Image 1 (cartoon, helix red, strand yellow):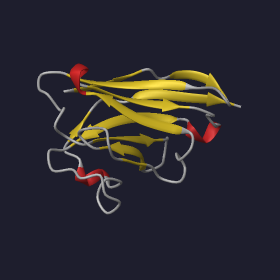
Image 2 (spheres, helix red, strand yellow; image 1 turned 180 degrees about the vertical axis):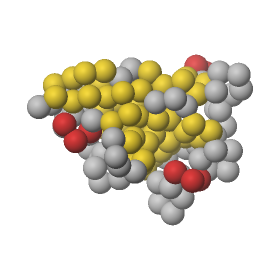
Image 3 (cartoon, one colour; image 1 turned 60 degrees about the vertical axis):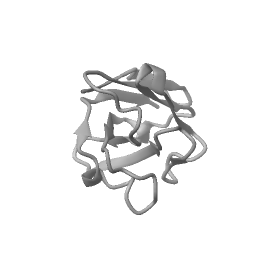
Image 4 (tube, helix red, strand yellow; image 1 turned 120 degrees about the horizontal axis):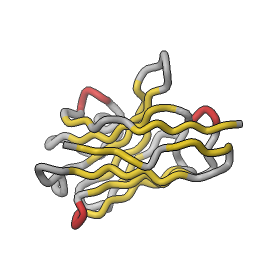
Length: 126
């Protein structure tokens, strides 16, 4: 089970740090990712990280502003979000899959992930 937390209301230009904690089983050997979904829109890829944290991938919308990291000892991944914009407003989800690879052809695709956490709402006011 994946539990995301850390969302909230922040002004444009502000920062938030999301966490995603795994329980019931260890996901420390799996790559993991973050997605987001705004009302009426598709679920968009935000970032992914391999099992060791040595490889990460971001879409252009997140590069330079968001940083994904993980602490395998705590079975937790994080998403540090800086310079937030109103268009970052969405429900943010963490996800993983035993077969996931952090490569551009697979990790941005939601259907590559089998395990999803409940989302955490991020609202950025202008």
